[in-house]
Length: 544
Image (cartoon, rainbow, N blue to C red; front, side, top):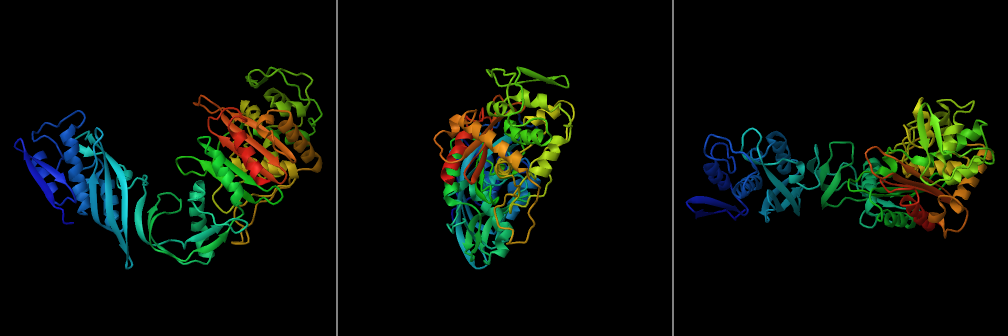
């Protein structure tokens, strides 16, 4: 590397400065610290205690980075508090990842944390590319040895690495794809950031079916089933074109809408076909909560509960559904939102548009409703909870387990054991307003011959009542504020779900406008109209 090691004598003690450091750094620091290259440990036999001091932080950092630069994985790992895992990942850095000519420049320490910049070269199959990135390390006191050690995390080696991940360079597992929307517009992670993980998964699943040829890449290989994450392309492959059901315009609106609300997700689809028009998430972890989330949906669940009550002859849209202050079920008392006025003479439509919890809980005690009635309605009519959706990427298709005790009542209002995500609730809305269950999908089943899930859907009478109650909710009820200004045929349902340990409820909202249905949730976003409502309204506005 040509930089060598610069050594100065300060107060009779060697001070080591690494800049493209060589193996000499290890020798000198070992001499300072004593046995095993302890990076700042006292020469005395008694282990040191307390946080590492400034000198220890500097010396340990220099020794670790110096050994890493030289490709001495075992030696570098000895300066960490997890030599086994560190050694394996650092060895893969030079071997599987084929990263060489490493030059690491430490930055200014912030206490025991030291930022640094890595410059290197990745080479494979006759191709080479420069690699540059920044990361950080933290020096801690070893619990048993008393040595100052690098606190080991995979992110030390690269900031995007997590536990179990490794770096690899070579021919990509799948050829690259050029994903396009329903009209042929190219979809990129640069323009639609939250689509990044979706595009990675589409490439993993359909790269070999889209007609492309593999690239040579440096990638993160994840410990999970998650698709490899490309970091650097050494040689371009030939991308194959993959058509999706997405709409670039609706996707853009979804991306913009979720940015306003942390930990939020949204899905839009066409009720007449089940085609997904948009999927967006505003999360820091890359998890596709819009498709794979498993959380309580709150009062948006009342769409299914209302359908179950109508289908079982308990009541109808204009039939009785008294809204009382409280309702007791199996010794548990349920209440409404603060400030809701009781209405003993309320109809189902009135209790639905105001989202009265007690009205729904009182009605689940009526014959012939039993513990499994809601489960049957969800599975047989709405296609939920059977683990058979094949959307084209990983997805969760909801869960509505048969429950006794207090959970039977809690399930009816979207709490208890019920779990959903925005994909599920957008599908519920689509089924409610069309009467037909059409399994949502992102990639045409014709591409790989997969069989879409089926369910018998709703009767025309039930569907008509659900659609009208959702219209009333959007124009006169809890969804009115969020849906104001939207023209066409509109309807909606709000929800808020209490989650143990959270100070604020999750915000849920699902709605339709003409032939577009959308659902959103925002963790700790409050009432349905507070956060999820504006997201859905923005997406419906873009959907036309």
